[in-house]
Amino acid sequence: MNQLALLIPENSSIKKHSKSIRVLGIDLGTTNSAVAEIVWENNEHSPINVQCLEVAQHTPDGEYSHVLVPSILALHEGQVIIGEGAKRLRSRASELNLKPNQNLFYECALRLKLGVTY
Image (tube, rainbow, N blue to C red):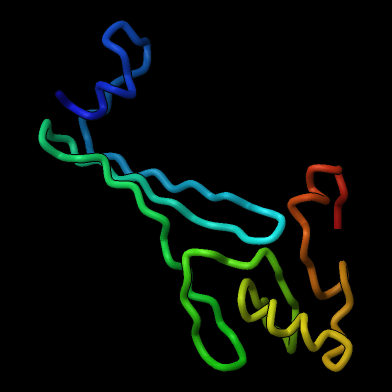
């Protein structure tokens, strides 16, 4: 049985694709975020492949890559720094003159749910 048939019932009005499908999903979490990929090649014997993707994150010590991305963003020295790099900068916020909701953003998923804008 074609695995896509499990997702689309026979009498469904959803159009079945004749091409391969790639879908990316983003989970924007309060503490960590993640990106997942689903890939399906259009043939009866092809499995549906699902995986979390590693995301490259610049840090003061060089590149860091992981499937979890801390949900932190810093604007520092003219650069936008996300994830692990921003998390490390946050630990030095006073020293680097980083101020919450000005040039250091975290816990934004919760604030977005509450309707806070920046």
